Image (tube, rainbow, N blue to C red; front, side, top):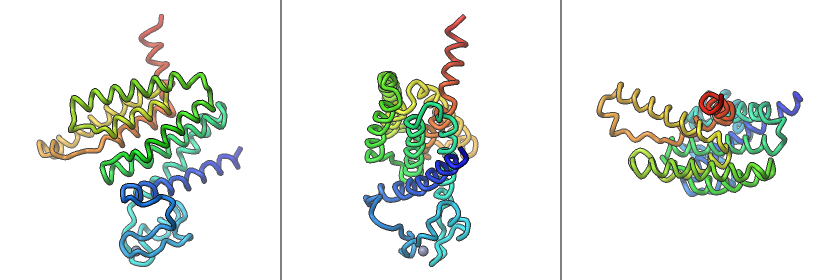
Length: 254
Ligand SMILES: [Zn+2]
């Protein structure tokens, strides 16, 4: 039990590191599998001892060993978040079997990559969404073939809902967000509903805060929406079904 918890956390830390590599390389048209990482500033190859998730960043105090250039804190934070997220997935879904745990972990891995690329480049890459969609369908089928239909339906509704919003407000939302909502539906099933609601609420709160702080200037700032959807997705992954049950019980029974 303890061993499994430690192993899944370590796997999350390692895949958090890989998520950072993918998010860094894919927008630059580099292969995520193309050899060792280099320092962005001096080009020095990152040694294995400097590539340990979270720890290396702390030991090096967030700087390159050779040129002392800053390494963004977003990278070790992603590693730590996936370590914790994988552990939480295992604790939450262990009873549902390995496929359910893998589905949750894969979802968090995809959200981590997309959050990084959307924050840094304002893109949600198709080369990430495509394999994510295939993995989601395969893992849902492995977990419970009866869930395949509901998850596909949830994906179609979630993607359709964001498509309508994106057509109404083309400046606020792009096709990347629409495709992300579709993929989130594949992973979450009906729990995608609270995920989208939380994502919209968080995005709206952030928008109000920006306007309060910067006035009308804030309207010109383009804010990526993907990270808000990802935030909603994480909450829905762990509490979405409970939220849907509460909603259904409160309004449609008795
Ligand atoms: Zn360097």
